[in-house]
Image (cartoon, rainbow, N blue to C red; front, side):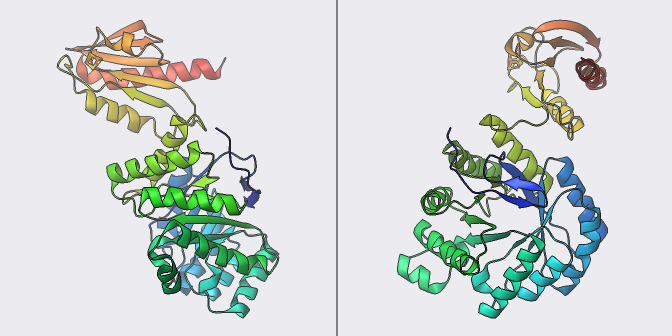
Length: 357
Ligand code: SF4
């Protein structure tokens, strides 16, 4: 996989583009004016592996909340602003690390001048975000709809407004709820610019649909070497967006974070509540950053063999569980209710052993 070469920008010290790894980001869905709730979610996103978090700044009150959020945030923050250049200026004054704003939509050259000057002064990059659903009428007419070419042309118009002002600290997103249009749009854009690409499938849907659409779309792009930072959009808790993003990166062997949990699909031999056990193990290991493989298997006969490559695993039978490492049985646990706690103890022991060399 050869990555498309992009210039490097930095959002609050987190490098994007160039030789940096593909960065994972997400967006809060709390009311930004509610500082405690927003900070709680920013921290949860950071714990789930988000390296950058974006917040909506829809009004003055939200902008006024930014200094308090920024002061406590463990990760760089991006202010998402539509149309109102004053909010962009307030966000920059509040020390925000980057803006998401489309310079062509903020009311004219003077306003673009003001935002660009302030962003330069603060070293804050700007993300241009073109959404197929909100292209202007002229472009829609010219291209016969929100086509990939229309999205690219729109992005380049916004880019030109920044370049005219000697501003190159830019990244670009082109989002459409159509996977194929999104992929095509990024391919076209990558032929024309070397700005870092922020990739995502917008309005992807609820957990399963959204995860599938995002995995297919982002998977194709990343496999083609396109994408410097990614956001999985789900109609769901944003913490799960980070989880899906990391699974996509892990599947492509681009980045690894936390345990990989493999579990069997269950079959007529399964004699325990394997689905419940696998979900509880996954939940218990949330936030663990170390990379290792955990297997949760449904029968004692085939389980260890099927999961031979796992660092540690459990296979459950009727009233009995066996714990194994790399396919070798190391312990037997009696009683279904003991499987989860005893397995978690063994995982902890495994990690401690590994940490101590
Ligand atoms: Fe069935 Fe056992 Fe394989 Fe699970 S591990 S799918 S229970 S044979």
